[in-house]
Amino acid sequence: MDQERNTNMDIEKESTTFDYSKRAQWLRAAVLGANDGLVSTASLMMGVGAVKQEVKAMILSGFAGMVAGACSMAIGEFVSVYSQYDIEVAQMERESGEIEKEKLPSPLQAAAASALAFSAGAIVPLLAAAFVKEYRVRIIAVVAAVTVALVVFGWLGAALGKAPVVRSSARVLFGGWLAMAITYGLTKLIGFHGL
Image 1 (cartoon, rainbow, N blue to C red):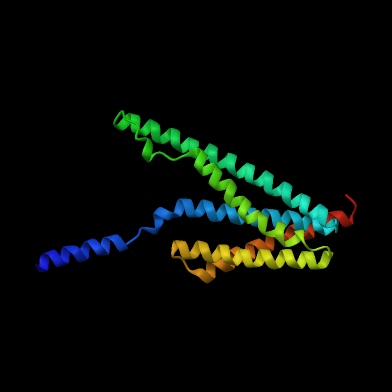
Image 2 (image 1 turned 180 degrees about the vertical axis):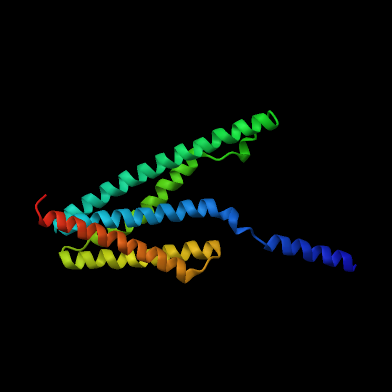
């Protein structure tokens, strides 16, 4: 009776223990994609906004950045995962001569997920700027929306990976702010000197 009870407790313990490192690959790709979409698009919009104050210029540059970035991420992920796929197929053929398709990664699925994650991040600054005509308020709205999203992405990545939340959120936040500030400042400088 006691042995059966101990066995049941061991099974319960095993079922509640989760290896967070197994989440690392998809988590990294999702957070990286969303964060990249957010920071790239916001920085691009801030750079254009540094020299062109019209809402149309900011929105068009942000939209072009979102489409180009999503395509780039998808193609990069497709090529990367397809290389992994080829390596795993060759390894299976060497080891057993059989290809176990259910164990292979999906390049198309990875590409779609990467493009979707990038677009999800990129939509934040686009929506923040889309409905604000006044230039200064639009810049503040973009920075505020991106700040909230950066903190959320940092928190989400840390929470899902069981890592320190404050440190992760701060790292993501300061990195995003730095990218926007550098892009805004350098574009303003170049625009000021008429290049």
